[in-house]
Figure 1 (cartoon, rainbow, N blue to C red):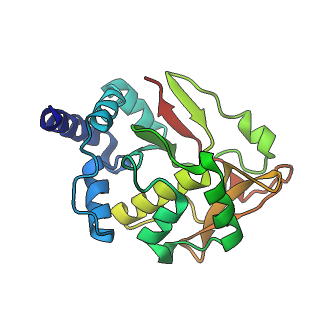
Figure 2 (cartoon, rainbow, N blue to C red; figure 1 turned 135 degrees about the vertical axis):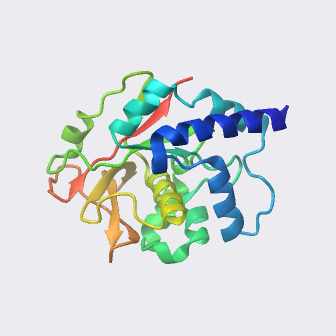
Figure 3 (cartoon, helix red, strand yellow; figure 1 turned 45 degrees about the vertical axis):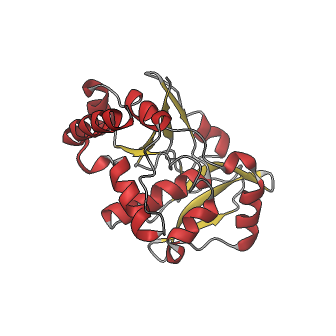
Length: 224
């Protein structure tokens, strides 16, 4: 049964790739990246639950066309039971991260920072809503078409950035901007951006402040 589901998933992913082009990263690509960068040898996307959820949450062609037109990246969540917290991603490619120890420790202590569940994440590659406060930026995000839309956590954004960079060899969003996240620290929501062109950095930034360099890139999660 698992093998049949894996083959069915591979077929549907290949079909989606014809529409999305480089805006989709398959579980096979992620698995190969993690094998190359870690000591893992097995197929990390092999459970019945993971394959079922990945299959069920691949949109129909019309929806894929819309996601492509709106500039979304389609990427699987990390494999079950591993690579779920920020420190996991830093260990995969430590030279990509420039996050101070206080923030790293704080995020480890926040349970919601762990990426949970199986399925796909749809990430808006464009940076929207610059020069707005946190509250004003939230008002721009509206769930629709069967998708729950929200701000990513630092951990989710780090996963997306890391896998995209290792898969495509380039950064996923404009280097000039920082992205507001849902990760909460010191009564504010952290922002994530790039230092020196490609190093992931996280900054404590007031929810009330506005900057032309700070915007949002929502993620969408398909509701089953």
